[in-house]
Amino acid sequence: QRQMCIRDREYTAKFLELAKEGPETEAGFQAMNSIVRINRSGKPFEQSLEMLLKHHVQHPDMGLLCSRLAYASAKQADALLEAVMEHHKSRDVRAFACMGYAGRHKRIAERSTNDHAAGLALQTYQRILDDSADVKYGRRDMAEVARGGIYELKFLTPGKMAPEIEGEDLDGVKFKLSDYRGKVVMLDFWGHW
Image: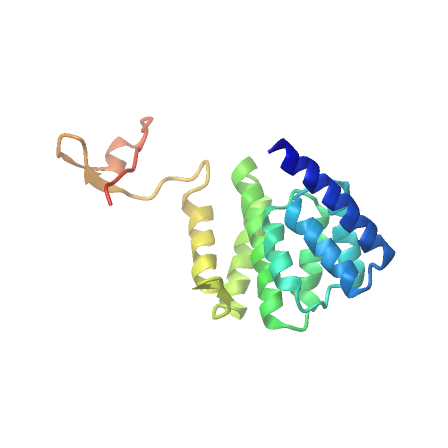
């Protein structure tokens, strides 16, 4: 693990040097893309996002890069995602940027119960449903992923009322989660497949 981190830092430094030599070139884009792929924060990551914003908003491979930014902690990620969402000529790439933006703000909302971030995520998921529902996101349509994100934000984030659950307890007695409203409840889901 430690060797991998050292190697990642070494590669990141080399990729950043390459990116700075020709930020507007294809080699520069690929170097920045590599930095984004192996990092989620840090100065080289932030510099890469700034150079991508300046030189590569229209790059055809920006979609996958944008979806990775859902996990970014750098604030520069928002500026790049917003630019791609609004200005990229490809509908599919704009959709991937929306997914990255929604995912990033969903994660912020989940960590801090940030209502503003939750609102941005919900708006962006709705935009995906309105504009890009049929775009493929891996094996699924973006609509399926967006609906899942909306559901999680509305019902499964800290501070939200849990959805109704019905089942049997260990003694085979049927129960509903709502029977225990106002009480502390620990749910342990398991099964045999």
